[in-house]
Image (cartoon, rainbow, N blue to C red):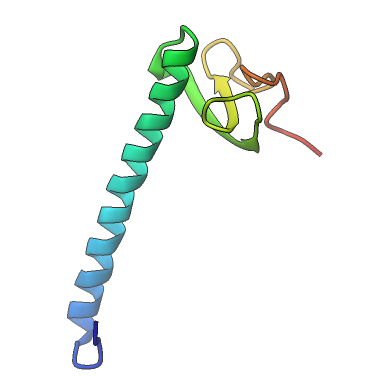
Length: 86
């Protein structure tokens, strides 16, 4: 795509549209990852928090926490490691 003829208004609109599309895609990915977890163990989707650490035992391959029973995210539901690590 050639952007050389675009004015600032069009570039901002294009950028805003891309950000919106990426947010929708991110929401879809997170929803599907949470579904993987809820299908694997009996937990409501409202309780699931996806962590940022890699987890070999999780179906999402990242740590997962229960925000109602473990609000400090001290124990991954699959590997038992905390979210806060040194």
